[in-house]
View 1: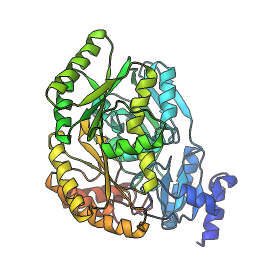
View 2: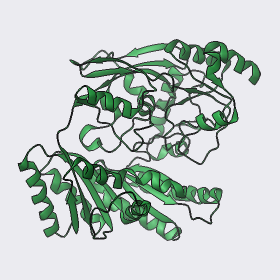
View 3: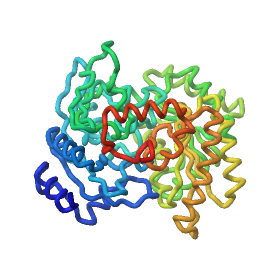
View 4: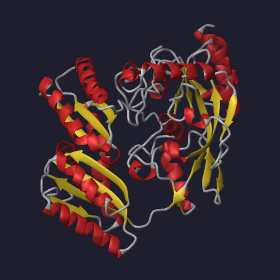
Length: 464
């Protein structure tokens, strides 16, 4: 079929005004937050319901047309980038909360529901949706499921997969599967639901999700602590975990702090300049727990692990302390950062960070490195900022060498080259650093079952 015939057919499958081919739309819905690849989709379609999604997928399957799912487009691995003439399937108009069950503590919603929308809805019911990250205001639940999003609360609440009670998915052949149906216990064979979580739309598209909720936390309180070196961060984590049930434990470097302070819209937590900072959060449900936090802080100071610190005394101060961490990605985006999202077991984090710091500093001493991450779950975010005078393509070419060195270290530590951002196109060629050849062969065989013609987000996770 000609491109014109394909576009005309798409208009018969969804509402005619829900197919866009203008340049601005192709550029907007054809990309995510990554900057390595330029979008080049054929068209953008906006289905309104499951039947329209099935119709688009069946048409694409019949004519072997590539489809790329599009949610909030906040991804950092190019999993939602359509760079090779794909048809982008946007879920922006499938954005309704469909049902709430107070006894099961579940919400059934369409994939285009924004994460913050679900969080707000849960709050209105006196409950809590705990998966949270800086892009919660624009990321969508379908995308969160497709990448098994993590974020800042994993230490307490786990990843997105922990909160998915049931799914409806459209496979690559257009079949509709209803998986798990909200059950807590279900021992009837393979849990296919888990295959689609983190699959980045390569097996099928999520068209409905039933998400679990939790009781709302009480009196959340944060502390920001300044440390003299990174080796001090881990004993601080151990000390606080021994006394408190933490809901978060984050870290960031002095370079990250400097970028945030330069914005001018967040107050400094304290006057002392420190090489590294930790942000921890807990429920101060009693005065005794707050006192335990302060006693643990004093112990860490006595041990030389902490130079200074502050504990939030109000909701506003809690929000300001979190901004120190949550504003980092947005702030450094102005420097076109090369981003790596890597993880090892928690105990290996200090040595792992030192090894990576040393090799990048040795080969590219002029590159500015900004570290931050979810240290409580072993997840580090390595950000290398593009020098102002260096062309973007030259910078990314040099970063390709960095990839090789970093992933060699990851493999040596038996870590993951993508802790929470997925593989997409940015990491697909490096899958073998975290997965064995046997695992990859099985993964490809699974894809062939659900997507026999290879139309579902091709070129993501595996090379085409």
